[in-house]
Length: 242
Ligand code: NAP
Image (cartoon, rainbow, N blue to C red; front, side, top):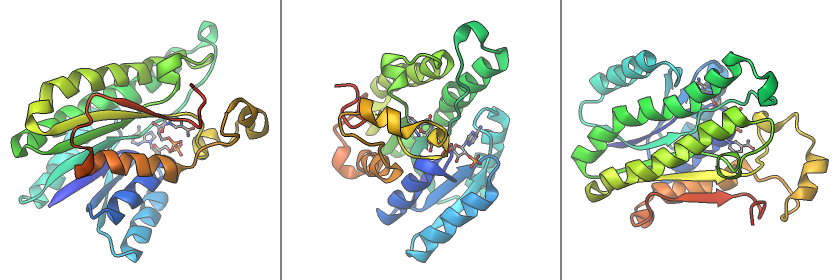
């Protein structure tokens, strides 16, 4: 079977992606790092709708954890492979660069950019061998235009976008597509302390996006219909960057 792995699938955008991919027929691997309860709830909701889901714990910033979790999964699934990888796990550690702690820089780069590298490098070979695969990374408007207070996050997301474009060229002939989506403001735990009333005035659509709207876009990129889209960054931001 062709499985889909969603890093950070326990909450927010990742949870919505897990559910939508399951509705589209993929057995889903829900990755989380700390909130097992949330991952179990996503699994329960998928199964309630008749889908298949498993939980896979690892920290995307720890290559050994990724290798060990995916090797164990592979050993118990000799006839399956992970055909869809959604690099979604993420954190914010905002602050002006002049006062930024080393850990705020490195943690954000490690989770977003190095997480992309380690998970994708591990799974791109089986996708290329099977001649079918989808790598979709959840980047951000911040990685396209740069946002004040987010030099770490903009650098990480900008790096993911550049790597996406380069990797797409390496595997296009193998029917593996590599794309990114770049959301603006989406209502999740990550944005819950932001002042929506003020920020929504800056958004042409007049509101934050929903996790489900991002999930629909990711599910399309994961589908057969998106076979000729590769190396792209698709913005989903209510017109914010228009
Ligand atoms: P969220 O609600 O805070 O959820 C974050 C998810 O990432 C959780 O499932 C969390 O797992 C997981 N995670 C965090 N660190 C991890 C690690 N080291 N290893 C594995 N999983 C980890 O965030 P969100 O808003 O859904 O964001 C999802 C993605 O969209 C992120 O890449 C974010 O940068 C991007 N994004 C968000 C927005 C927005 O406005 N919300 C806009 C643009 C881009 P636990 O539950 O186990 O903690």
